[in-house]
Length: 199
Image 1 (tube, rainbow, N blue to C red):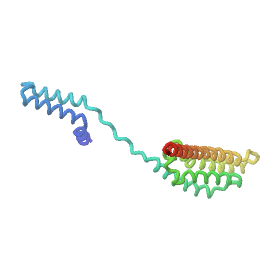
Image 2: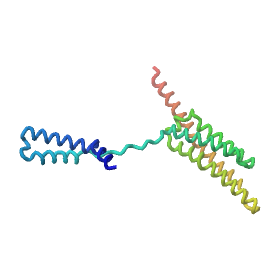
Image 3: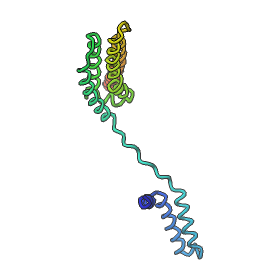
Image 4: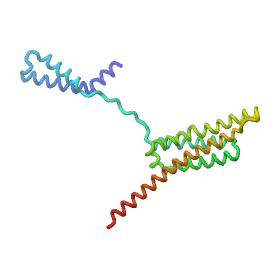
């Protein structure tokens, strides 16, 4: 540990700047400027160089780029589909869930990667839907349905599930609409560019 610290200091900016100051002190000594106080001059210039050197910067963390994040979400989506295929759901909820998963699949299609990867909020919305919101809605329904069988007469759990799926579908539609609008603006901009360029 101490050896690695010593090696790190030898390579540090402070040591390099201090060493440059020390070399300048030695040059002053050889030219006769420092006189008999040369050790103090060399040490002082080394210390001054070490003090004025910029501090070491820690290395930036190596976060995955948005495309890699979307690849992970895509892989999680495949696991989610396997889970949903085994879930026992009423027909109304199953239909809503199918519509939602089809929309999520379209948004996660590799063709959209560039547009979605440039929007951290879009990546977050997709990640949250796939990893938390959809599985939690289905799991909560399955658990509540079991308790409802033990104590009938309660509010049907499928009502909550259908409502949750509607809300998630609306959120995914807003995301898709935003992407459509971005593409439309890009297309209009290109048309204006071509019009301005034409004689």
